[in-house]
Structure formats: C-alpha cells, structure tokens
Length: 63
Image (cartoon, rainbow, N blue to C red; front, side):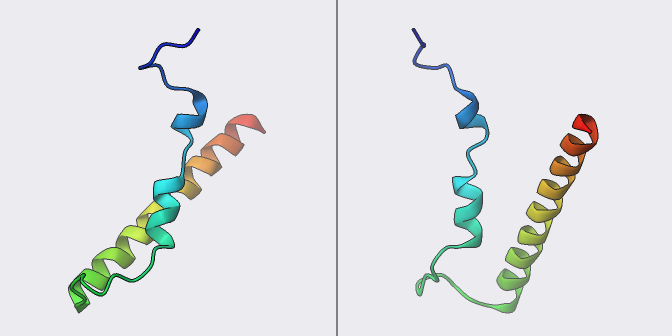
C-alpha cells in the first residue's frame, strides 16, 4: 500500500505546469509592457533549452 506523502514516477514527469506556461490565455488584467514580454520570452527560451539538454543527455546515456 502506498503512503500519502510518497510520490510516483508520474508526479516527477508531470509537465502540465510547463505546458500551461506556454499555452495559456491572455489575461486582460495582467500588465503588458515591453520588459515583461521580453522577460517571458527569455523564460520560454530557457525552459526549451533546458528540456532539450535533458532529452539530449537521456538519449546520449541510452544510445
């Protein structure tokens, strides 16, 4: 039987929040200026580069 605090592998590989960051609806109440748009753009690029690096390392290890 599984303990309440114990997490499964599915919990470690849940990418729902990451995908929600890329594909969320525009919020009209959120401030929209150049600095915030650039910050979010750089964050998206860094997330993609990190995921690409992790996938590369996994493939390198497996193959």
